[in-house]
Image (tube, rainbow, N blue to C red; front, side, top):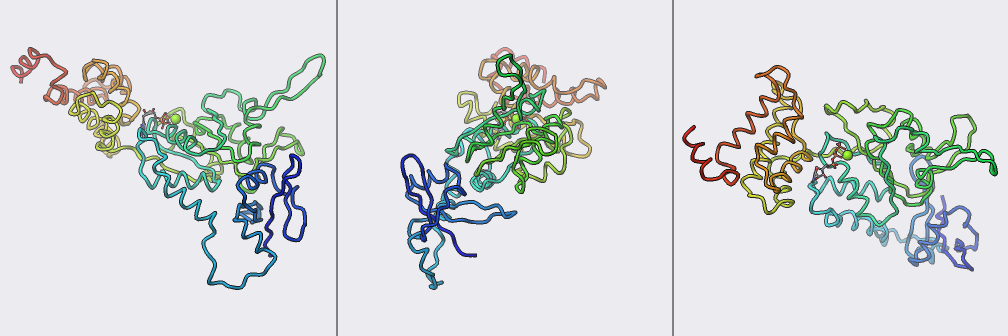
Length: 387
Ligand SMILES: Nc1ncnc2c1ncn2[C@@H]1O[C@H](COP(=O)(O)OP(=O)(O)OP(=O)(O)O)[C@@H](O)[C@H]1O
Ligand SMILES: [Mg+2]
């Protein structure tokens, strides 16, 4: 295939694309792509992606200038500067990760790379491990238009993803498209689909063609031959899902839908990472107490994973952050645990219940002196007497 490289020329408010033979390609390239190339002084090269999807990639103007002359000197081929730019961006992107989000460098870069390459990403992991936070941080780190949809909260997927049909006397019946329709038509948009695993199965069906890289369209109606809206160039989807854990309101997600995503598994923090996060968030809370919180959380996580584990779930990072917020506001570790942790564990079975287990675990930290500053002198005295 011959290389097609075009240069953008502005006439009036139009950005026209011509190759070096003067052939016009304007109608084949989206307005925003042409405009961006023009503004950055770059040429565009026609490329073919997966499933024969063509796209236009920014290349140096010198490529356009040289494009009518065949190139033979293979030794002089360099990494295209646009590719180098992409590489730089990805590998330099760890600094774009907010400090308050704990995530391994590789995972973060993998996320950024997926977004830069226009993949659909699915963040998975148990409740409260930072999926939504990571997805939002990614969206913030990229300088692109963004849209947020919480699919777990939508009662009527059809109206939130497609739109509504209305009637009034003047206009008769008319269709008003949803924000989602606008979002997918926005070139280079990053679209967050939060809590995809909790969405109504109707939502999954609607999204099936949208997310399929070979289709990338939204059908406005179920009827065959109904009008469709194409997903604009460069649109990236970032979804979150509670998968592989105990979360009961999560429906088992359709395999075909999952297959349309690159899956990024969020790591659950270990005790050291959790301690680091809590210290960063609450520098004024005694570090030993923070250590206790991190250890308690960590122990519940390992306990819940072990075969003979006495509890079915671990404490999430969300809960340990919430609990530490109470410590910061002057509550004792025992008090904070009573309102944030214990209610998450069943007291069925009395002394053998999950709640009893958790209480005993927390109690160890409350009374072993790791939390001295939560006691006044007298209490420490009486504690020691009791011991
Ligand atoms: N990896 C993490 N780094 C920093 N903070 C975290 C992390 N994980 C959880 N948190 C804390 O927990 C809170 C909840 O996190 P987030 O909403 O991202 O969880 P989630 O995985 O989306 O949970 P859910 O499955 O319930 O939607 C955050 O606001 C943050 O305070
Ligand atoms: Mg979430």
